[in-house]
Every structure is written in structure tokens, then in C-alpha cells.
Image (tube, rainbow, N blue to C red):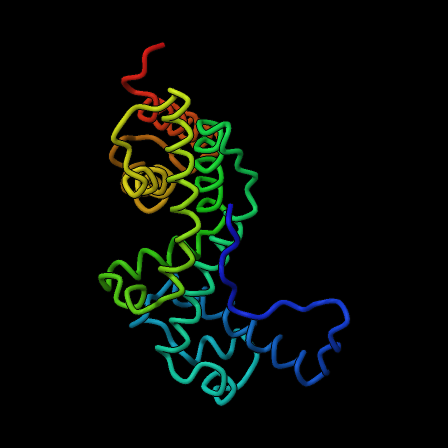
Length: 228
């Protein structure tokens, strides 16, 4: 997949090593972001407490405001960093456009696995949507980092249709929303669904079966209407 923008400039061979003060500053900033991700994912923007964040990050409140300006600036930085991490890891996938079905199934496996292994990101998204996407809508980073993903999906669709593997009228946005939904819905609603359906959706066995089901549904949709 195509590279995505990153928030910080990478280091290159020959660059001067960071000074101790710079290393300490970077370490403090990362500690604040990690603590803030946990707090915002659990309490949401309104419920999050700056005092709890600085205590967990082992810094003082002055440093937090120095790096991020205010609570809104910190929340936006956390949200953008979370999206950058997701998109950067997507970019590491070895997508072969000559094998479009395998490419889509790999994207489904990755997305399913990512959300399961990053519950704080899932919590952050839940709370962001309770605010109607207020901060995500303000961020160019959130939007722009998704461009390579959309181009990849469009390329896979084109390749699959040219090879006669996929049906017509496939929409890249609809497909990704379906991939994300099949990866997140059972996590965001797992407690209520488990109680309603008398099925423990937190077990590894159930989640493996869920992934198999999701892969089968995606393949069936992509190949619908194609003569075998």
C-alpha cells in the first residue's frame, strides 16, 4: 500500500543524535499521549481529567499545556496519532494487485485483528462518534491518511473486475465500511449482544469463527454475479 503521512519527521543516517533534553521531551510527549489515549478512550472527551493524565504520564500539567496547548489540542493529537498508527500499519501490508481477492481478504484479516488488539482505539472511536465526529471532522490528518487506503481498494476492485473475478458496481467506500463494521461491531456491542443471544462473544473460539464468517461474507459479496 502507498505510504501515509507521519506526524514526526523520520531520522536519517548521518543525522545528529538527539540531545538528552530532546530525548526527554520526546519521551514526555509520548508518555502524555499514551496516558491521554487511555483516559479519553475510557471517559470520553468531556469526562477525561487532565489531572489523571499528568499523574499517569508522571509529568506536570505545565508540560502538558506546553506540548498540546489545551485539552482540545491534546485530544486532537491523540485522535490523529491513533489514526496515523492504523494507516501506517495498513501501509505495511503486502498487497498484490494481481491477486485482488487475496488482497481484500488480507485487509479484512488485518482490520479485524487490529481492532481486537487495540481496544483503546476502539474506545476512542466510540466516544468520538458520541460527539458526532466533531474532532475527526476538523482534522486534515484523519482524512488525508485514508487516501492511500481508498486508492488501494479502488485498485483491487479494478483488478478484480478486469480479471472477471468481481462483479460490477462495487463501491470502495461501501466495501471498507463493511470491512470495518465486521471488525468492530462485535467489540463495540459485545456485552449486550452476548447477553441478548446467550453467547460469549469474548472467547477466542467465537472470535475465530467470526473472522471466518466475515471473510466468507466479503468474498461472497465481491464475487456475486460472476459466472463460475
